[in-house]
Length: 76
Image 1 (cartoon, rainbow, N blue to C red):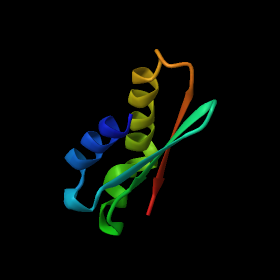
Image 2: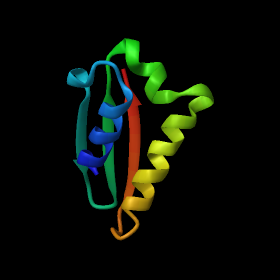
Image 3: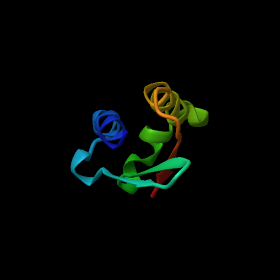
């Protein structure tokens, strides 16, 4: 999941070198944290959160084979 989020985020932002994705896993969930440059936050979130929602939908579809819930958080 980490690689998927990283590829999507780097294609959206102006500063792809500042994209940092961390993945934390416990027994029931996988937490994926996405950090981008402050100037790129709007590009990752989108109008009314549409792009962020789309990223979460793609990750959810990709993780459907796993039995764990995947949570994507976008942090500054």
